[in-house]
Length: 352
Image (cartoon, rainbow, N blue to C red; front, side):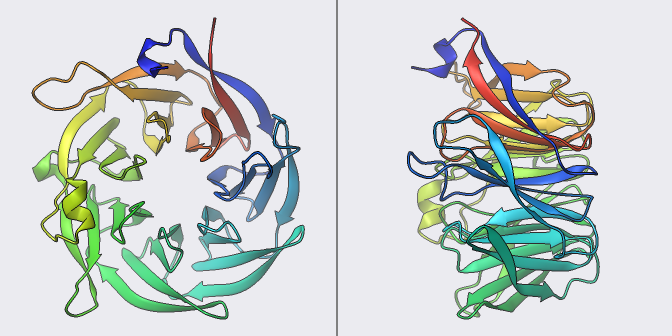
């Protein structure tokens, strides 16, 4: 059924996960879990320097339990976490200037590698679609690209300098090895490998001059097919960008992203997180303690697509919402993390 035709959709709180003793910064669903046979697994990280692994009691259950608390890996805040595509390893980025690679070993997780090189706080970490490359970014204004080698070795193949301020997030495109970063300098940068030199370079900067954000860009997310990107900012807007996916996938350097529309007036404080579900629902989490869900509207104007608010959950948390993440498998399940120290699992349900 078309989402737009469904009436009275609301976010229903299914469970509150407690255990972190400080703000929760990041969330990541394990992409290899959440199937009919394998219970869903969620990683969280926060200001208490720990990473927590939560697991669904059974594939049909709505309850999650804390399966592991990883306390020895970092000496400062853990800001971001990301599973490799196979779901076997978890990368964690910390204010201690390192990125750790953790491997599941039964019910335990062992640190198999520590990536060093950033001058100060590492803010975000992302794996490419094949799991062969890892990207990290930092307050040192740099983005590092690491090649994954056999034997848990990670080789830095490029240090990308171009942002003029703290880089908040890195994210690989879902189908092509093109990297995106967003920053305190109000821009999103697009990085691609130069076929001739094998070095990485900035191929596009999305800034104020091309309908970009006017303040810090906190996060970005792609739709399932990778032809659209959503970005969110301190300027209280969400922007939708589009690309010709065929030319991007053919390796055309001129496949440039263009601004499609801006969503404003939905949050009244900084929007910290955005995520796009497989079904096409955009979720945002903000400092106004609210979660908003948007869907592409059917009444397309000549100007391109427009988006409408599907629902808004006021007071979703008691404090700022730092992360919203759709479950990659189960339709309409969303996790959120907050300064209030909790993680919540939500289900998008019909009120009827």
